[in-house]
Length: 336
Image (cartoon, rainbow, N blue to C red; front, side):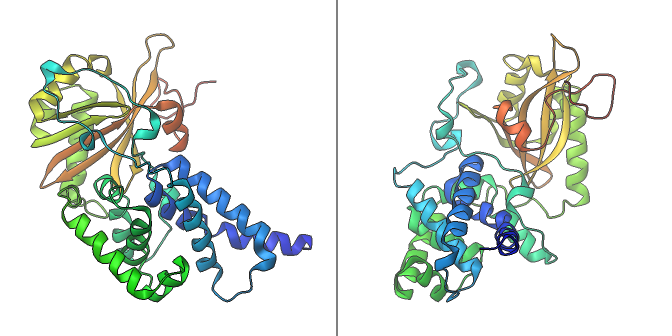
């Protein structure tokens, strides 16, 4: 290819990166594996472009490659999970912080990396719902090909004939796989757990978040208790501990989590949910050090889920957040 042709192909491939990342993330449950899968997809497409005969659109061709990449990555049968998918809720009196391997956990992802810009509010809402943690956890229960069928048909609104062509199968087989996938998701009570988050957030939800920030940064457990649903859950991957109810959640924060007092929260958009980059006081360098990316599930004016992802070396750069917050400034400044 000439330099001009190569540059044009690079541009044409790159414009599909965000939607492909969203697709691979839904398939794999890992933000980093999704980016690897998309990079592999684009490299394969670039190398194989000479054999692309244009019998389908470039978009369809890229999805075919991406699907094969993801299915290859899933052949080991691995699936991502949340703490509540693995263990029973632990009473505060028995709380122990036991880490598990990174490969166990469903990973958070910034909205901007997986949700293409759209002017259609309904389309945007469906896209956000399809990357929320509860839905992502339910997707992980599906066999890989059923997962692909459900995502392509229900989330991306492909026709059954298009999915059949992509998977080299029949329309009847696609419809059967979709029916089985729907039945599995219908049996899961988790799928609608966070469905009450508006897009964009309504005034009541905005005020709830403002009250949450004030309560958390002030470490006011009484104020925080008032914001939590009676069945609220708190998770902290990579630890498999998860807590239920305001008493145990605030009790943990006041004891094992007491070092988070006087923290700072910086808003982020994570998995179609409101969230925060959580910085806690840095006793050595001063200011604030990165600690967790939080994703909040809210419903009926209360917080129903507080999910704290603690691997700061990976999450903060992924979300475009600095690795130090100065105490004397309201702005965010990265420490050299």
